[in-house]
Length: 196
Image (cartoon, rainbow, N blue to C red; front, side):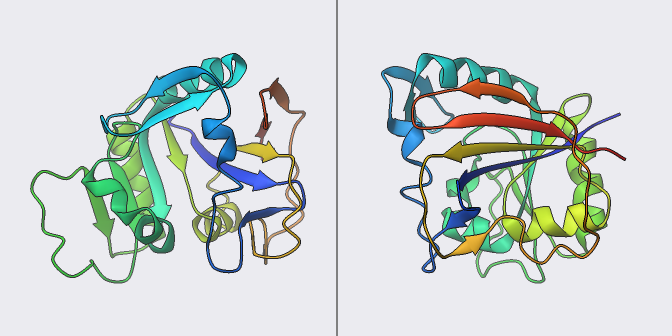
């Protein structure tokens, strides 16, 4: 069965972005080391610690498709039509962006609901996992019982305010299993199974 796995970087006080949707401090760990991890975009390479490099290589090998919300896709400019992991990306939205009919893109805008987007991402992922970005999409999938694991890249930062990862969960509490832990530089990678 294809797993759906939430993937987000988060501050110690639970924020994934500041009040203006800024993520620079949250994502600093992607550029805090001396091991290069190339992406499908030749102009974009991660520079992480050895431990984070091993974690990222394993993760990118596991992911067969990505799922995200419209705000995250807009903030990332839909990754220029190609998600950095080199897999199809499915964006849950009410409306396809103006002028987005691009035949060279592996980013797909899904307008017929969350369930359809999850199903399409699972079909594209095959026997790999569906990775998921975006706090609203993660929250909706958690509330719908569609998340199998939560992987948080916890950064040693207190933002104090901004956009929370687990804000407004309706079906809480949600029980999680014991995490696996990878200590990087400027980040701790935590992987929690969602108990069903």
